[in-house]
Amino acid sequence: MPDVAVETHEVVRTFRDGEVRALDGVSLSVPAGRVFGLLGPNGSGKTTMVRILSTILRPTSGRAVVAGYDVVAQPEEVRRRIGLAGQFATVDENLTGFENLRMVGLLNHLAKPYVVAKSRQLLEDFGLADAANRVVKTYSGGMRRRLDLAAALVAEPPLLFLDEPTTGLDPQSRSELWTIIERLVEGGTTVLLTTQYLDEADRLADRLVVLDHGRIIAEGTSRELKAQMGATVLEVGFASTDDAARAVPLLADLSATPANLEGHNLEITVDDGPATTADALRRLDGAGLSPTGLQLREPSLDDVFLALTGHKAEDGSDLGPAAASGHRRG
Amino acid sequence: MSVSDLARTRVLPPSASSRPALVWAASDVLTIARRNLMAIARVPVALVFTLVQPVMFVLLFRYVFGGVINVPGSDYVNYLIPGILTQATIFGSVNTAIGLSEDLQKGLIERFRALPMARMAVLAGRTVADTVRNILVLALITGVGFAVGFRPTGSVWTYLQACLVMLLFAYCLSWGFAFVGLAAPNSEAAQAMTFPLIFPLTFASAVFVPVASMPWWLRPFANNQPVSQATFAVRGLMMGTAHGASTWISIAWSVGIIAVLAPLAVARYRRVS
Image (cartoon, rainbow over all chains, first blue to last red; front, side, top):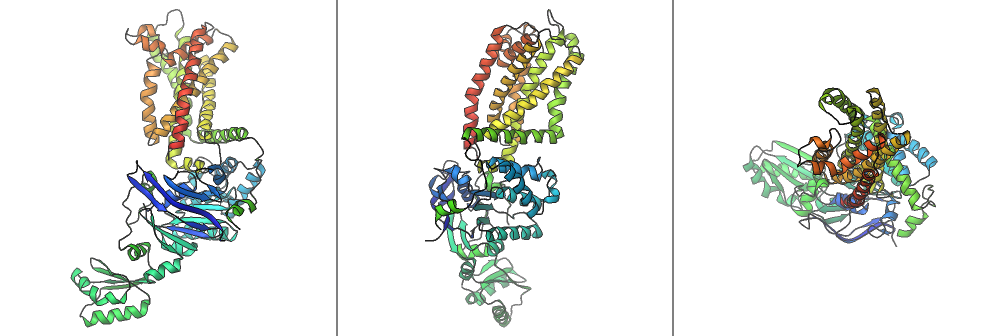
């Protein structure tokens, strides 16, 4: 029997008296001791899922069991075993880093000497020792996220929910956070992570679920998902939209998925980048078409979506304050 | 290892979890109250609003308007200071609305909701912190009052009773403002929503001027509304002219307000997301 940290069955959550279905029957099973990724654009239901699992929000219907306890029937038991960090869980700006951790520790009903020692240790581990007695207002974005994560760890929860932990961070802060998360997992913590970045899911998550409009549209390992859509994206730019349109039938059979035509640009997902590129150039040349730009790149979330759903990842659906205030992705 | 093993085998950090839930609830309230008090001390603007504003009111009414206000049978300063005390503590309880609204807006409440803490502690801690702030305000106004000529003729004991009646009233009122703070979309709106509530209550009252000086149609409201009753009680106790009725009426208002509004605020806290 596999180790299961989180198990949900047909979880539905609606807002505004049923007008908006943020989650539309999500069943997932998160193995213990691993990193599980919820991948999807804004408005796909990721944050709603995390809020239900962390007992902040009740599901409209369906069942969710976290660390062995039902989130509706025994929320207290769930809260004792989880940590929550990310875009909406936050820290008190008017307190120092140390005071924030101490407050969260005491509210977790832990013994005071333990809380003090653990807070100091976490500040040290997360490179915040020098800023420990500074008011959080003076912290940078990266420092705040690290403190936020530290606050989620004071009680040493076996299960950690990270809601878009790196959204809005600069590349260096991102990779610092990634390293911290990896260390936690090595230490045995189960992590459920939401992200809208494929590279983040790729780097951290062992298993992924892709959400779109509150439904699971794909699941598997990062490798499986990529295999489903081709490993690389070939972008070809043309001088005119006419040229780009003429190129579509020429390159169609190079990719298993439909080409994405956008104005002057044509994108296809391919398995063998260099060879396919050479082939594509020969075909275009033969037809008298000369590209103005050529690029091979890693697939993005948009590409995954295009491959999986046939439509682009949109973030139009409004799911209330939680979704609306998030970072938007063009 | 199965689901339940995950919960059991992991050694949880030391907690004195043998303590009864009520003790933990009290501990949570104090933790939150302490956090709110530290925030007050660290945000100079909030401190100025809390402490300087009532002093300004004292000076304004003592030296600017006071000359034209006649109070039969009393020095105006002795009439004024108990009124300012009432007004300042009521204004202080508005901070509950603003503070809670800010916590909600910034996402702190989201964090609290995912912690195994007592649900009512976020609200109770806030109201307790605002009471501590009000005690400071009472002490300050008392000091400033003496400096500008306030000479209460009651005993120290009745003076303290007056302060207790007022603190109780303001505490109960802050539960009402907790509800406003949770219902408001942001802290600016929370402030704006409290204004039409406290303005008529503090100014169409016996706080600054005798009700007898008001037009006939305003007097029934001004005489009987809760802030006036609290003012009568505070003034009577401080000046040693206490008549039990207003004290008990004021306490009854306090109990009534908290009995109705605290459950509403808690229900709102549970619902809000």
